[in-house]
Length: 121
Length: 260
Image 1 (tube, one colour):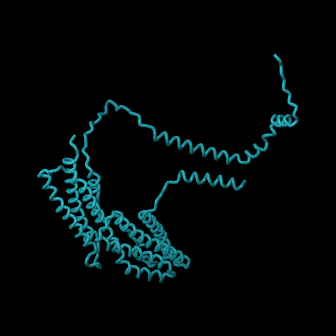
Image 2 (cartoon, one colour; image 1 turned 45 degrees about the vertical axis):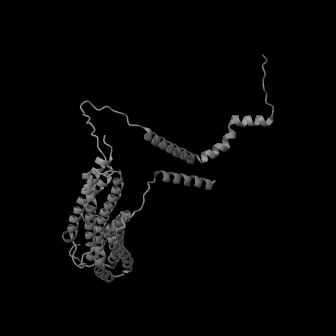
């Protein structure tokens, strides 16, 4: 087994390695990042918030209600079959019609508004 | 760099606003609710300032009271304008095209235009005498326009009943071709009765529509002598329409829908 050893002799490469080791190469980037640190943090927090809300919304839409068996003391009534007619919505509208008047109430305003002394102030 | 920063902040604000802002659409009702609220706020403020002025009649108190009075007058007349438009909207929303209600719609529109004019006119008030003269003049001028509100109330109810009549006819026209052929004798007798029953309702609606504007427009309109007779008639028509729709429901269930 030959024990090969690479030796870097290029002065530019040596300088680059030294800069990486000393950390001076990252200084311009880190200074820029620190300048806009709060904007970036705020941006990522908002993005995170929107993604979380979207995921939550999606999950809540997909979630099906769990079936829970009724407790023993409860009696489940048998559903009676209801025959529905196409006239049912109209029938309901007629039943719900209110003949009471006045409706909507007429605005009660002061039609003799002045600075004169009146009996009721 | 500063511009980029501003753009990023602006976009973020737009995103947040767009995400959380609920959609609100202005309608004739929301307009009226807003104007009515404005009047109530302004009126309570005016009442306090008027009390101050009457207790201590300084020029300062007088000016404050007059300014508040002008704001209240404007809010009052704009509330009346919004109310007239709200009634027109309620009538038109039934989409009946019932021409017997057109005179009422015209009156409400005239009232709306009149109150907008009054709202503008009230802003010319400068002195207490101007305000007094405006109040005296206003009371006489508005009698006829205020009446249109009472008429509009009845017209809204009638428009709803006409809508039911139209819907009943449309539904009935869909039902008839589905009935068995040949028609059973009992069903045929009931079907033959339908046109006369519907006509009876139409006649009653036409009769009360013609009575919305009373012969003596100068007379007093109140709950007892104006609204209550209409309530009785509206209830009568409602009962007739309910009987008719019950017949249609019965025909639909027993002759059209398949037996289970």
